[in-house]
Length: 246
Figure 1 (cartoon, rainbow, N blue to C red):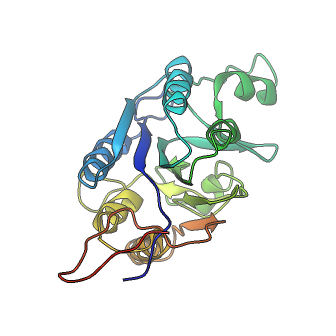
Figure 2 (figure 1 turned 90 degrees about the vertical axis):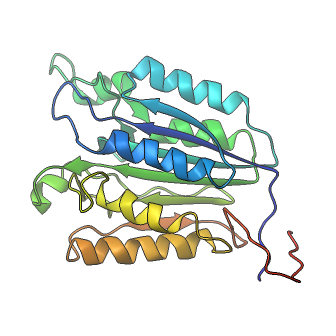
């Protein structure tokens, strides 16, 4: 088996939001809870937030970050609404409610959570490996015109970081299900993320293939990475095999 970049602990922060002031969603809470269960099964210490308002969202980030050490592998997952504005990506908390009383750029900056803020805050801890999964920009209608107004914009990965998006930039992830419980992206992720001795980028390639097939090519996950080694979230040694971590 190939070697994997070494880390001491696996920590995850997972946030799923169904209930919004406008346009609530159906599967984000299940997605967050099921991913938590899967990650805990492969040795992650997981912090979970459900239907967080902005104050709760920011508190969860700040509390989580204080526990990060340099030798950790960190995974952040968000399921809910996301929006880009002036080339910045925002994750929308449950209490986000643009009232048109101010300009949207001022309102979203003060009432949503800037994805770059999350990345900068975690990156400042200089941990070993970081994985971000943005399962957002969900919509109800399979119409590309809607997705074009709410999709996230591309983001650059800091050193030793992988960023995965449930859908292509400027487009939307479907708020639909094939298994009557999970969104399409997380259903496929759950099918692969606990596979032993599988590089995370190969895991996400399999996820993308599954999403593409289930949506007839409408939803196209993508990722950007600066990882320099293979990353195994779970390893299993074959009888008589020595596993070396570098």
